[in-house]
Length: 486
Image (tube, rainbow, N blue to C red; front, side, top):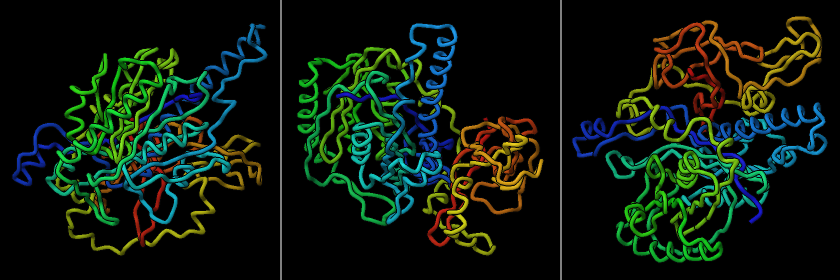
């Protein structure tokens, strides 16, 4: 293989439901621990944006550091002053592949909203790879064939009290691929085997899925895993991988993994339980968060067959790790009542607010304002430097006309200048908090505060923009940016 992973990122939503709360509500034995759940204003698209931002920001940070190092070398007449250029800069992303089993839209490409939110150039190809847990591997392979970005995200919903509900989790993972000589982990070998049998399925339009008897699926998967594992290890001449990652929608496979396919240093799966198409990415990211250089990682994804991928980490891993590990993200969650979670997922039909329904977002104004609405990009006056949020043609400060340059803010933190807490306006997670934010690079605008930040918010609080869904009307999702307290 001649490609590898340049950067990666994960996103775990901020909310958790305690299984004890679930059990008490439904009067069942639900076990111990908690489950990661997405907020009412999150879907697979917004989760994907959050994970991809982490990966791209990490890559850009390394590129910026190397560019500065090259500039210093050039000023000093160093040996690489005339030639050194980061390969990630020389080979930008050419394609984005989005994998999910829970797309926000059908008959419309969801990856285009991710593309817009990330502010990628129009020439970057974007496509969905949706429908099954194996979609995550499909996105990986497509992106790894060149300088691609693979993003996988899912919101797993099970029937109340089911094993799917208790053992699932919502999350996203993103990987940027590129030249192997600049990778944090190189792809050493791949092998796949495909088989048709009924293990897990969900009818189109259904909220929750179904699974055949666990033992039947396990009997089908074991020989497939053995075959793919043996083939990929034979290709690489690796006898015993340092780390083995096993993911599967069949829980029997996961129970068997540690005894049947152990790694020399670790054997693991998804840190949040079954997360659909995001399973493989989240499980790999958790290993990359802790692995050392020159270690081998064997990925085994058993879903409608088995896909085996062998990686070898490089000495670049330490500088490329995501800033907040998956384990740290998992530990940071805050509890939400189980009944509230059911309402967010539409499984508990509560009395709606006695207010007019919101208007369906219109396509023409959304298209005209796509840079602002999806990428939070304002404009900066080239005459006086004043930043306009949203963008404007006429400068409010000096009056210059059409003398503007782009001012992206999606990856920029800010400070709260003032805020209001509205306890009367309807929200699935009251109260509604609106904050006036001064961005570090200039510009001021008002954003809603997400993820229950009212108790932690104060004038001077530091916040960060997050891509969310304001509401859905007439089958159209109204995406925009909110803020979360750091």
